[in-house]
Length: 142
Image (cartoon, rainbow, N blue to C red):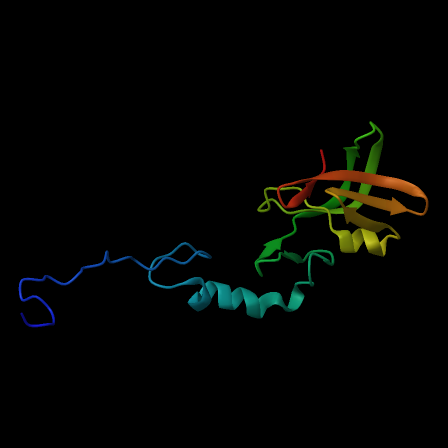
């Protein structure tokens, strides 16, 4: 008996997968080679870092994708204890499906925050402004 491949063996044929970009959703390339993604990265000169934005600019998210800000205003949020708080200079970004609160912006406004044991507290001076519970890996304001 000879060692080696069996002459009757037909080589494995893997499924041929089409390349698809997770950025522009077009076939033929991956995100790292995406011309739109590269162009967006170059255009980040008017984009601020880590969610801090100026008027009429974009918000850069953690996945290095910039989203257009269409408006800036104030919103009211009912807290865990029933008190209504007002957040000012809130950016309206329609492409972002979740409401996000920038801890950096809160820090710039004199707040501090601490997370431990699945609870995050945001305080300003001696006042607890927000207290949120962790759900999966995110602290969710309800």
